[in-house]
Amino acid sequence: MSEPGDRTGRGGRGPGDAEAVRAANSALYDAFEAGDIDLMRAVWLDDSAAESVTCVHPGWAPVHGTGPVLRSWSMIMANTSYIQFVLTDVTVSVTGDTAVVTCGENMLTGMPATPADPSPGLAGGRAVATNVFRRTSSGWRLWVHHASPVLTTQEADR
Amino acid sequence: MSEPGDRTGRGGRGPGDAEAVRAANSALYDAFEAGDIDLMRAVWLDDSAAESVTCVHPGWAPVHGTGPVLRSWSMIMANTSYIQFVLTDVTVSVTGDTAVVTCGENMLTGMPATPADPSPGLAGGRAVATNVFRRTSSGWRLWVHHASPVLTTQEADR
Image (cartoon, rainbow over all chains, first blue to last red):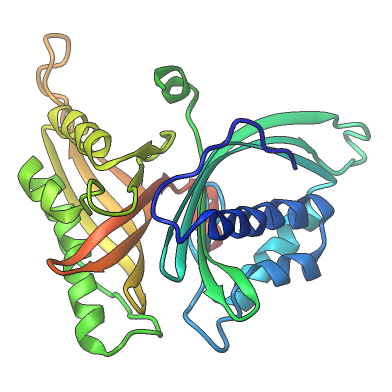
């Protein structure tokens, strides 16, 4: 995951918070790229001891709860043979123990080979994400992830 | 705006907080239905004195800052002759001074009449939204709104 051209918003307690939040945000995409559910689990808040977590994958209805959210990631990662992210327009806003990150998710993905298509190749895609983190004793953990496709016509209007 | 079959998540300080957050969430959709930018302004955090606000309309890239966000709503409301919401699957999670609401936005909309189509009629639509509120001295104010279309195939998978 690489992250060119980002910027940091107002409202933090200092550059340390924003940097830690930015690292937590990168860890989400690193876990997805690695297809590693243990890394993914380490990113998310454990809602057995805290508030409920929410995850909206692009085009999906919301998934609630750490267990169902991690199962949704397992399913998505099992159906993704290759994915690489370049994050753009990263903004970080920290207030107390909550941080909001927005970013553009620029993806290069490969689908699993099938008998009908043994070499499916790579495809590009773009989404935008809002990621809300909570400060915990073990660092910033992901409370809410909402990603959605960006329509091409809207891209041209930016 | 009507709201059948909703449920409230864990993590609040009590039913009072969750009810107040739910009312603040309803106010967003009431303002849109009324096409009233003053009501819309009253929903949002004023980021001249606080953290930056973010708004992702369905299919859009993020809009940052209270001023640009309100201008985006003005533009959308000017291009919507009629809209009515039924919110479904409303969840509220309150932690300290931050609250996360997720809901299904079920819309009945009318487009403005044009010379080519003087009676365009009504259309239905569905999106999901994540709304993050901050507790302020003037009540719960909207910090982040992220709405995205739900794909029909995913709807069938719920």
